[in-house]
Image (cartoon, rainbow, N blue to C red):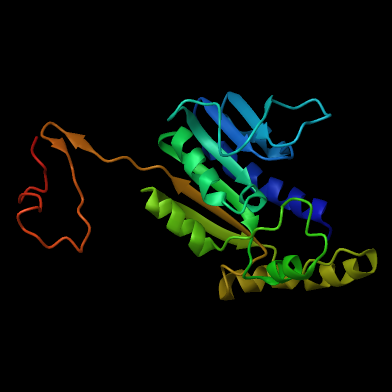
Length: 235
């Protein structure tokens, strides 16, 4: 399997997921076009790339930085980051910017190379690295931490492609022979696949007629500062 084959498998997986998400605007931050975008019921689709394109894009196209998006806050229903975080050592800035433009209850879908896998080892020792990334890998736990810090909820996580990344033609027969790993290893080691897929939802704090519902951290033990018995901070 070469890298293009891997991207096609990821695209196929997204084709099964995207029809489940409706809305008005879909934003893809990626240097390559995805066929699966066509399966989305969202009417308006925009792709932002750091690189210019010589092909006719299948939907609206902009060239710019992922950490400085030209969109209003809370204006996008679904944001896709396929191998986007791997382009920047400060990937947290990309997550923050994607989170800014998401509407309340909007979704973020992230695809990346799992550093804790055979693919991660290949990336570590390969020169040059696979063409879809710039050399920075982030663990699933790290992305979880960033999302939770923003107040988001992880709604789905999976990993796939447990076979080693065999790229040469003579190795293809071995890759095909190892197909049984894709059926067994997801049950034994569900988060050790070469590619991870994470879906997060942007949560908002609820309001009622009395005001904002506050949630104090567990370390806050001062009763004078704690909310009243109804858990509401009166204004």
